[in-house]
Image (cartoon, rainbow, N blue to C red; front, side, top):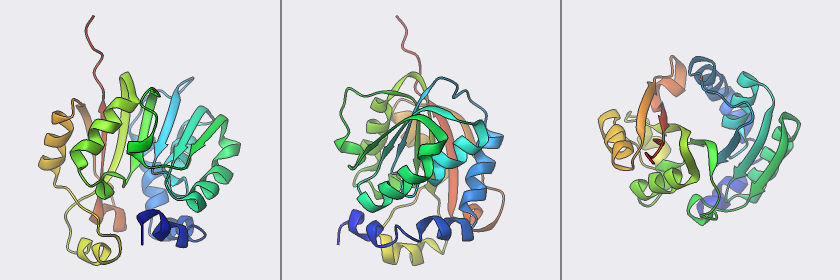
Length: 205
C-alpha cells in the first residue's frame, strides 16, 4: 500500500490523534517561541496532512496572506483545505509529493512536519525544499529523532529518524544556514521529535 493510501485511511481521525498526543499544542508552542515574519509572505506547507502545522502557524501569527498546501493524500488534503480556508486570503492545494512540485514555484516560508522521514533520500528531500525557498526564505522542519518507541512507529510507517548532529550536517550540506534547533518541551513530541528553523542564504550579487 502506498504512503498516500495509508494516510487516506486516517484522514478523518488524524487531526484528533495529533491533538490527543500533544502535537497540536507542541506545534503552537514552537511558532510562539520561534519568531519570524509572515506578514505579506507566501507560505507553503509540504506534506500538510490534516493541516496542523500550518494551522499552528496561523493561530500563532494571525491570518496568512498566501498559503499553498501539498500532500499526496487527497483525503488528507481535503481536510486541510477545509480547516485552513478561513485562516488565509489565498489558498492553493496540490495533490502530489514534494519532488513533483513545479520547479518554478518558490515561497518565502516553507513548512515541513515529518516529511523528510518518508523521502527515499532525505538529502534529495532537503535539496527539493531548498529549491522551494526564495533567497532569504525560512524553512521550518519537524523531524523524528532517535527514541526506542520509533521502532513501534516504524512497524506501520517505515519511516526514518535523525540525530541532531546528523540533521545539522544534512542541512548544511543542502546549503541551509541553521538558525535554531527547538526541543519540544514535553510529552510524546519531546520524546520522538525535534524542530529546526533554517534559512536559505541570500546569494551575493
